[in-house]
Amino acid sequence: MKNRFDLIIFDWDGTLIDSIDWIVYCLQTAGKQCGYEIPEPQAAKDVIGLSITNACATLFPGAGDATLPKLTACYQQTYLSRQLSRDDLFPGVYEMLVELKQTGYQLAVATGKTRTGLQQALEATDTEDLFCITRCSDETASKPDPLMLHQIMQHANAANERSLMVGDSTHDLQMAMNAQISSIAVSCGAHPKDILQQYSPLMCLQQPAELLNIIRG
Image (cartoon, rainbow, N blue to C red):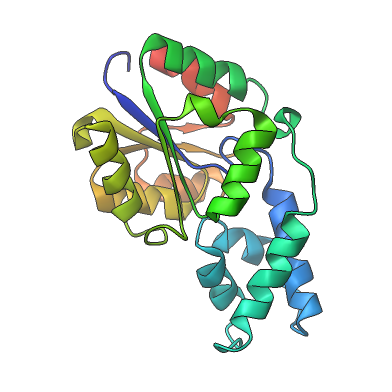
């Protein structure tokens, strides 16, 4: 796969950083605080990658327009209470990103996080300078709408056939399909390999750092 792509776009949670269990806890806590039945872990995982508003609306279908802001506020308060560090990245991810950038690839992030949440994470992991652009769900359309990928590719001046999406959820891979770009799945996050393969990724890796050897060829 060497020299096939110019732009590599990563999801954040569950793809670069080991945060899925924490997000599940935060979603469950938000539901409990707002008087809803606590969702099962996989149900919570299934909405990770969507914007937090869409995630809560899907996970708590009884929530109306008046309750959704409270759910999202409870989620964000809990999520931001934890101090992240570079150690929260999956093993080898930081080194992989550095080498890919030094090799000449443009790197980007397309995430369902808010800008506030992603900015905190980028600063805590000291990774902000590795990406040419990052896009968040409160700045554009939520996954699986391809708008954020189109915006990233336009910014990077990268053609569809030279762009790659790397993600851990069905929302990431469906977004890549909708944008008509290639994808690679990682099975360390929200969804298992058998589910991810239904979305026709080029391959499914167990850990994101395995991508480095794939790209090296």
